Length: 216
Image: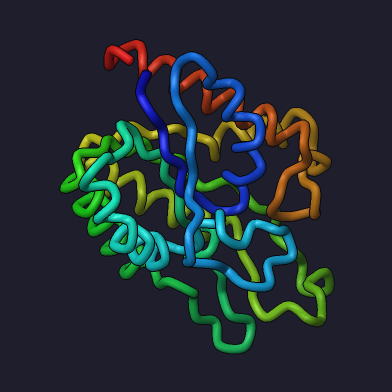
């Protein structure tokens, strides 16, 4: 049986709760832990949250020695939601678009040196908040136009290197088209349990199909 390792943001933490049992009998499942924590996370995903692309690079460099001994067959990877966060006070992005593209290329290089096959997951949509709906305590904001822009960067990088892509963005946007903004748990970024389960089923179907074509 092939093994699958997951590095992703909080969205992957939520659908991961459903994805692991859905892959039973096809993949052994594991995900990021370790010391690269996002501290004081209100969603309880500290150690398992992959963070932005720079944090993924740091984690891969840390775990590289372990993976040289026994690398996973597949890495299910996403980063983007943290990269595209914009500071309200300065308008600067956590990871600017040019750096995001360079980081993705470096991630591919690091993982391929370890002999692991990457499967990329497109970043999920967010609901834009009108200025009067942004909490007073908020220091950053996300815009769906930036999700589309950063997804396009990732599409170009992954497509240029033949990386399989799971289009979770379009799948989730279609769910929102069918069921409305109620698919979110916090009104703009994170999804409720039912939506996370649907996302997991969509990803599992893609992974089962990929495993079939690659002899898993």
